Amino acid sequence: MAKTLKRAAAFTALARALSAGSRGGPTVAQRLGALPRMIKASSRGEYDGGMRLALMAAATAYVVSPIDAVPEAFLWVFGLVDDAVAVTWLAGAVLAETERFLEWERTRPIVVVK
Image (cartoon, rainbow, N blue to C red; front, side):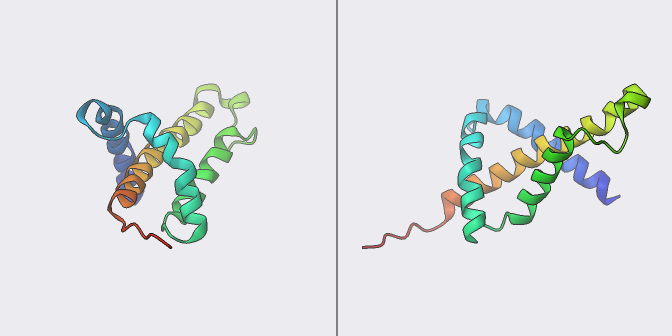
């Protein structure tokens, strides 16, 4: 049940993000530009996205890795399904997290050090 809810949330975030640019939300370019800032803020402990970033890195490593849970060489289409699910989750997670990060950046107080 929890996996179904997470998958539904990822698909919802993906759909929202793809249509957000035309409705005044962050564009894909703004989201991609936010990734380095999000990683930097998380590594400094300013932003609480560390675990989510670790999960996204693990999903990226899984997709890029030649080792699969279900190998394509033996099970053709079924071997591609696990990669498709991982890519879909990763896209939704990146879109949702960058939207959350951009909102965090916009609402946090700016501190000027003299």
